[in-house]
Amino acid sequence: MGAGNSRAVIEPRWRPLPYPLPRLPRRRPRAYEEWAALRQWGKLPAAERHEPGYLLRQAREAAGLTQADLAGRLGCSQQAVAQAERWGGNPTFAFATAWAEATGHRFEPRLVRGSRRA
Image (cartoon, rainbow, N blue to C red; front, top):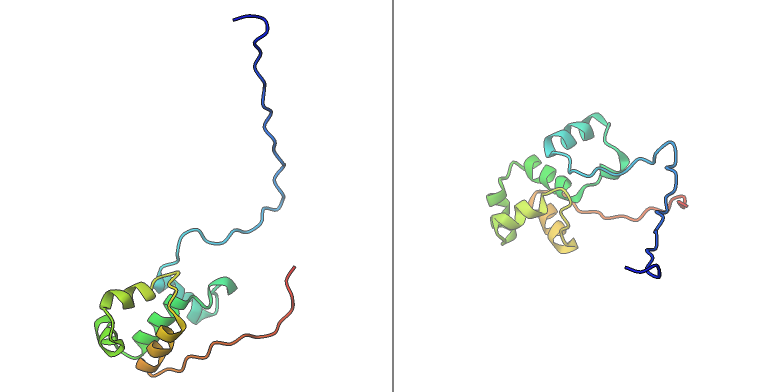
């Protein structure tokens, strides 16, 4: 190798971390039992209060139905019910409405005007 060959050195670009560190959302889903207890005690973080899958499970259990019973009422599979009840479950509006009616509840989605976040 001759004197004409040189290697470029790449300097890493970094920024100092902001202190205090910002609170990150949970990386791992909370177990349903823990979520239900914290909700009952009023200690659930605001971001987790309205977890759709767990709210649906809570409605089913309050009605005293098994997943298979509810699936029969909804005309779907037990696996579809189980999937909707998971953390991060994302049921459709129609499915959630039918679920509420099948468990003796009323589904009321609302938009509430509040202060703007930056």
